[in-house]
Every structure is written in C-alpha cells, then in structure tokens.
Length: 208
Image: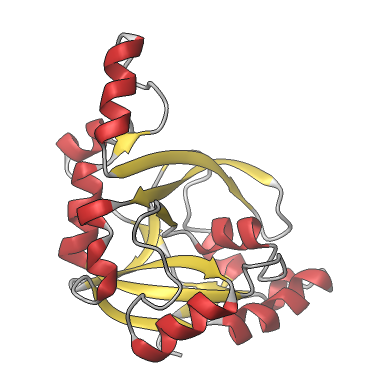
C-alpha cells in the first residue's frame, strides 16, 4: 500500500480541534480522497485504474479527503454497497480546480431563494461541510469537507484526473479490529495534515 499512515493518537496532537479544515494526505503532485463502493464498482476501478463498468457518470459522485469521515459514513467498510474502500490519488491540479469551482449545498451566502436555487442547480461541484467524527463515529467540533462532482468535473475520473487508485479494504478491516477492541493506541490512519488554500478560495468555501 502506497498510502502513508501514522498512529491515530499522534495525529490527534497536530490536527485542529475545531473549525472548517481540509484534512488530507497530499504532496506537490497529488491529493488522496476516499470513497466506498459496492464490489462491482470498487474492484473494477482498482483493477483498471479508472472508473467505468457499472460506475455512473450521469449521477453526482461524492469524494472525501478525510479518512475518518469516510469510515463514519461506511461503518468502517461494513455497510451494504460500501464494502470496497478506495484511496483515490487525484492530480493536485485537478483537486485544486474542484475546490476553486465548489459551491455550498446550503444557502451560505444568503442569496434570494430563487437565485440560490438556480445557482445550485447549475453548479457541477457541490460543497458540503459536515461534523468530523472520531474512530467510534462520535462527532467532534472540527468540520470535514466532502465534494459532489458531476458532468465535466466528474469526467476526469475516467483516467485523466487520476494518478492511482488503491483498494484499501483490507487495511480498513485490519484497523477496524483495533476500534472494536477499544485499542486506539494501536490504530493507524492515513497521514493527514491541513490542506492550505488561497484567501479567495477560503472565502468561496465559506471557511472565513
């Protein structure tokens, strides 16, 4: 597995405890995001290193750069149709483009209702801030981001926007055992740090 990991307890020491933050694993070329799929979609993507087969390009697809939010959503890979957890290494330029074009799924800018409804209908990158969660699925004060992609912003999932796709389902299952045993001192999670963006993008992401 190429995904870098650290002890969860060590990462707690450096993660912000509250506020809106993009926590992610990244370097100068790529950013890792996560999604959980049914086997038909997840195994195809891992084998072909692109999304195809039963994957739909006509629906909005949500990605999450925060591993523990994904674990909360998928029940650590135990929920039906979320058994295959993928670490999707996106090209950093593509991820930055997604952030620059993201629009809140709620009326965060207090627009007139009709104007907001028209805007949200047209946007192809949907932004949503949710409570982040600890390994047990309990809410924390910090907020985590997820992005919904469709149309031209989802098309790079056919290969152009992807560096690599890893099936990390076995890693998820292994770490789930530590959570179930209440042994968080043994828990490893992907190395994540705050992903900094420009002041203009922070404002458009409602981080200010």
